[in-house]
Image 1 (tube, rainbow, N blue to C red):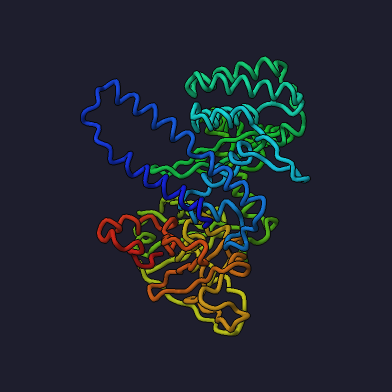
Image 2 (tube, rainbow, N blue to C red):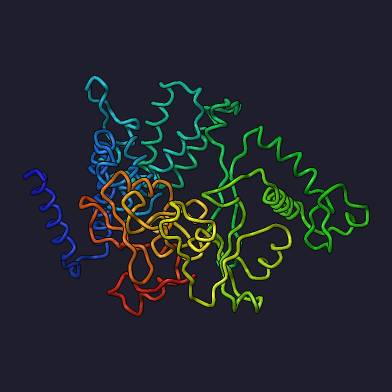
Length: 462
């Protein structure tokens, strides 16, 4: 690192150490509040330099040369932050950092007034989020001059109000600038999306999103058919899927409309899984993959794990088996039987892929949350073209981008004696992070308290 930069950062660290060691016992309550103000202002200014660093890196460097397939992945691994936080930092930096034109001319940040307020320590991350959300919602038809004035207005308000006050002002300003709501096709396309939330402790998951007019038209007619009273009712001994329910079945349907919509989506999904049209996904037919233990299966209790990483109560698994063919990997409690193919073939067999789903549940790169459905079989010790063997003990799971990362960066993988896959980063990313992935096996994390000095506690589990 260049001498003056290194010296400045060292001085910053020393100053923070000195500030953290200050004796505050003699300060009055009023003076303590003043200290809080000063610290808050400093924390708001802290991201300014980070924006410049991230912007220059993303503009000049290739993440592949530094050991990652994308900038979000590089930042997430190097800084030990989540992938979503990494993407947000990149997006914020792109709008709040000074830019350079193709001709080399210096340009102001996209959100110039917001960046100035941040440099002065007047606004924090919550204010920035509200302003960015305002412009993400503002239609493309609003002219540049109006956008500049709107940003100036919001930056001024942000310096005087908390995030909630700024949010109310931004909503009112949006209503003034776009009172008729005539959004373009591009606007609607930009806002489309469906989000499946994380699975909660009770097993339920929240779904939310925005449908385009075309998608709404499609689901309107599907819901009209499959969520009509009496259709797809799991409470019926023989739920009506084809044709129309008789009057008696429809009359006794006590479900709400939202419940009928849910059951209709489930029925439509089952129909699709029973059809050959979806084809294959990473070497297996598109179907539900489930792993469990023989004890739980025989008792009809406990929970299985799907290829998507979700937990499935045993009674639901047994009920699902009546609707479609699924791949089920059953283990004698927590043991596994290895399948060996040696050099007879390069690609993993379907049986091996099922074992990989059950053993690893998802991508094995530390920090990657890609579920098994989104992963490929990967030779964990030596790639096929380098003499690797297609044995189950040497195979592991890696998502597409991380599998590609092994080919194009300095990452390597090894299979440990305990059956887990260890990912060794290139020197530029090696800062002492964990080298095995426990995101898909949260039960292993519960063992950390027994041996907090060992970040890799835990053995292989189905």
